[in-house]
Image (cartoon, rainbow, N blue to C red; front, top):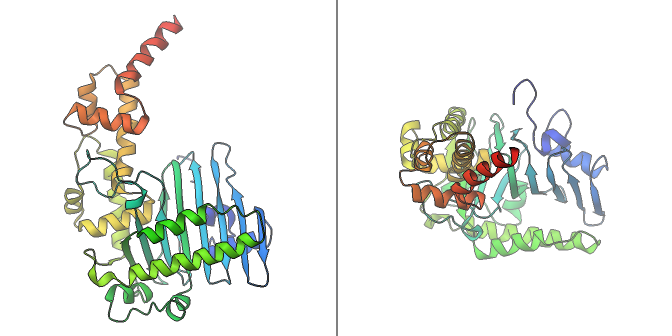
Amino acid sequence: MTGEAQRGLFRQELGDESRTLASVFRRVTEGLTGRDRLTDARQKIFHACVDLQGPDDKGYWRFITVRDEIFAIITECEFAEARVERVVDEGFVEFHIVMSSPVELSLSKPDRDERKFDEATLIACRNAVDVGYSVHLSPGQTSMIGIYVDPDLLRESFGLDGGEIADIQKLLNPQPGTITVLEQRLTTEIIGCLREIRAIAFTEQRDLVLAAAKLHELLYFIVSALRSRENVDDPSVVFTQRDLLMFERARELLSTQLDRALTLPELAKELGTNATKLKSGFKLLYGTTIFSYRLRFRMDHAMKLLAEESMPISHVARAVGYERQASFTSAFKGHFGFLPKSVRRLQVTGKRSAK
């Protein structure tokens, strides 16, 4: 966007000048915005739904809080333009799960079948008080849930004290100047809870009790998965402010150098980092995988070349990083739902109609 401020997410759109999570929930619970409001004063549970306000945006955010210890935000949105928002430490451990399907988890084999929701991952993170980061979401459909939890609740009620697991210790107690991020494969129990939470209608008072119970159940299964981290292959990663600048450079390369057949290891090497850090950090900051982010730019550029240029489809394929036209054709159809040659046919038909 040039000459105007870029749109943000719920902190910027709904919060006060502090743009904190706390200010968003304060405004929502005080009735300054939102619909489908439900309150259980006895158990201190609250829900409200806020629709997107942009003329070209669709969807909503659901806000749920339980005793000011668990804050959940369900995003079911289709953004017309990119969104960027600054995140500062508010003392929570954060859990983020992107629920859009399909989800691709690796760039190393870009021509393989895309992975489905059951193979998505959980991102757990905690930033130190002196470090903030920016979240970027691309235009298009976004379906995700973010859960912000008081660390004392995790320690005292769920037994997540870290013990001998170094990853958990880093998550609960990040070092100054750092952000700790864990990436954890979803279990069938976590996926089941997510689907049940999304299915709650929030039309009756008792739906609040159900939501609170399901959020506690979800945290139970998340903690169980985290406590098994001694047996996982990918260790936790710690980001510094320098790393955050590196992720921005990665985003620039992925969105501009479209004719290069970049793999995840090659990109990590070029940026002077490792694949685990690059994959986890990118997903946290940009709300998508490296593969999905790059695919969108490659396909959009291919569409523009097909519609505006007369170059052969094989040349278009190479222009967006595909050595084989068949691989490009498969990716294009998977992204848009029709073949590249259909764009040319529509273009010819349009010219004839104009005559």
